[in-house]
Amino acid sequence: MRKEKMYIKKAKTPKDRVLRILLYLSVIVLVLVVLYPYFVMFTTALKSRAEIYSMQGTLLPIEWQWENFVEIWSIAPLARYFVNSIVISAGATAIAIICGIPAAYALSRMKFKGKKFFLGLVIVSQMFAPVVLLVGIYKVMSVLHMTDSLLGLIFINAAFNQAFAIWLLRGTFMSISAEMEQAATIDGCNQVQAMTRVLLPVAAPGIVTALIFVFINAWNEYTVALTLISSDLLKPLTVGITVFNGYNMIEWQYLFASSLFATIPVVILFICIEKHLVGGLTSGGVKG
Image (cartoon, rainbow, N blue to C red; front, side, top):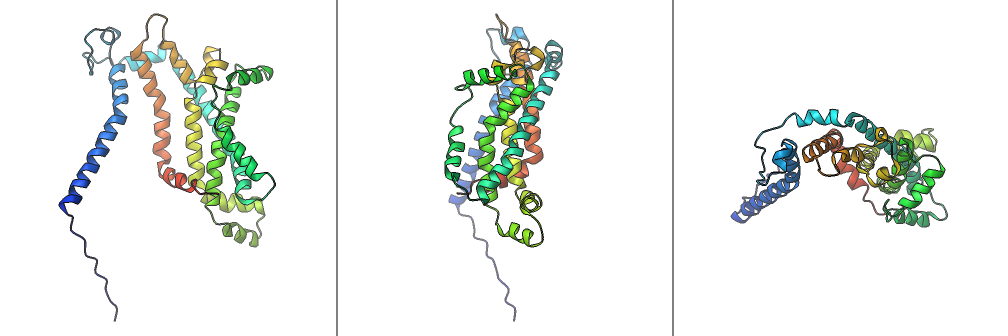
């Protein structure tokens, strides 16, 4: 005779209800704290210059200047800055992922001399911020005649994000059972085919996570671009919007309006692939 299992839901005690309410309140407060700077940016972008510099500061605009979001496109070549940032970020991401996948695969599946030493170098390379190496970067780019080019920024951003991509992808590959590749080799696949046909589809969440972070880091990069790029039409968005910082006055309404537009690609990227993000972060946390 088949026995049916009965699941009795435990009644919530007053203590559980209080804890749940406190949890919800904490989440609401945290969300408000995170979103408040963006709210201030939005309201400031809708103010006039006179209102921003008036002695009586207000949180909300007295007169809503929606035309500020239109005027910034004619005051500065923001469209060109957007295109430059997209080219730099996409190019750096492509190079970092394409080079990172075989390197991470080798570090997770193969045994060779100096493997631990190389892993140590990968971690150490993350300790150096671009500003520390700025002089050396400028000299190298000058020798290569790439000081005022988008290609130079693509290579630099790819190089500074390569270590993170390798480390995250290595953890992702190590979390996948090697028996899947062994089964593929038994079916007639070589090592490259087993990696591309079996391993990479399973590792998609980790690859997407690495892609997101490399793209965001390249999109937000400022110091190296400010140092290397001198032509106005080659500036990325992070450097280009500084055109609103005048010698005597900062056009805060235009600066904040353009900054809000600068966050749109990153937000869209997160919305499109957020379902892969949690799985990629957890798979990249495997201890090697």
